[in-house]
Image: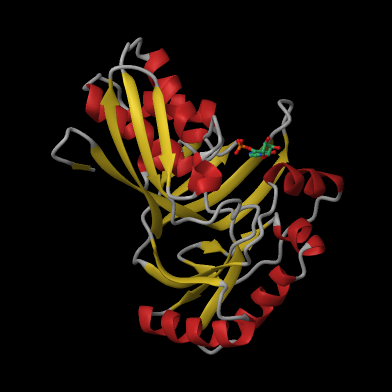
Length: 280
Ligand code: C5P
């Protein structure tokens, strides 16, 4: 977190990928019980957050998000001020770099960034565990972004056990330009539960995502890209992230990710979002 001259803080909000996502079962609260290995990646949004006299002001580099009255970031600010019984207002500016509806936790990470920045700016005493509790009220993935470390997440996703990846992994992340609705993906899974295809082993976990079968059944671009990735010489393995629609390929190095990127764009279209990433 960087403090700027006029008392604002600049906060990087990393996206995540799921290297393993196993749906254990349906819960009585309507959610699904998960076991998932999530890791932050080098791609992320940037937020500038400052205290103002009153109100919650929000601007965004993406006009579609800037126009919305409420979003996860403004809800995070409201919940923090209410819980801490603070009278102040907050101004948030969000520079959006993470595709929306992509299974990358972009909105969840923005919300966690607001909570972390407000703890710093207001100086209230609030441990990470308490902040993660507030985060869980905002969404299943938000607590993970309070810790921002690779972790096995259980429950709805809010029970976090940090794990150390032996080394940082490299990869290429691609996004088709359309999103997959998370509630739809879980509902479609529930109607016909079947495990995702298992892939290569990495440091004691097996690449797998149980939300692939529902997403792949509707959006043919996704399995096409995954299968193409798996045939490329640079690629160790490939997987869809979260409920989609992002797909990532793991590579041995940044150079390998960049050479794969060039061929991917030539094959699938030059305007498609494709970015080399570091994982962990
Ligand atoms: O918690 P979040 O708002 O991100 O969840 C979005 C939707 O995804 C939920 O409303 C639910 O339909 C589904 N979901 C689920 N089980 C989880 C996480 C999300 O069924 N563990």
